[in-house]
Length: 224
Image (tube, rainbow, N blue to C red; front, side, top):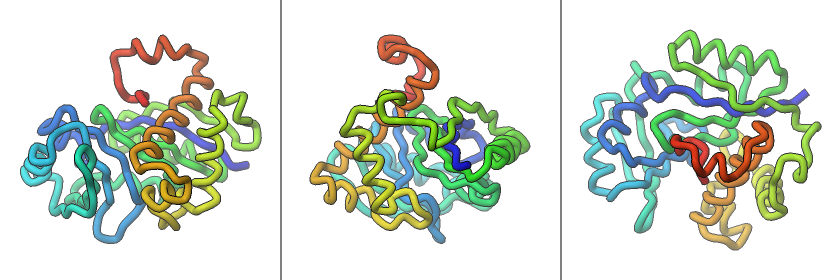
């Protein structure tokens, strides 16, 4: 039975922590789950010059290249050093598929699809073995949820369905975030925000907390 696990892990040891130390306001979202020469990451939250200085000075980052961007958000292909833990490869090795990965506060927040719940346990143990302090935020079976039960708006539900139908969550992705945004006739930023709000709604519904409580929380991990 297919399940989804929402998991948070420490950025230390993954190459992320050093970058966030250099750029504390950094927001990070994975555009492509796996790439042979690195990972495609949308970086924002600071001026581009500050972000590129952090990329250049981080010893955990071997190379980077600008792919695309605008005034507030830039897509980079980032190659981490061999000594760092490759979060994406590790999840794949343990039988999972990363549907979404973001790091708004220096910790990775992952939404992972697994065929068996035992795979979720294996992924958790693999992160724990590497001292990445995993925390399971939510674990649910996909056939036991409806859009109303999970707190999704119709737009959020339709967007997630469209993302699945167009292969956005496949490995490798059949469409990029920009291509999916074009299909939905919305901007890249609007799609990114809608997906984040959808994940927040899923987590909020599972934890049975109010929006006011999540807005008042000091940690921005689950912010929209």
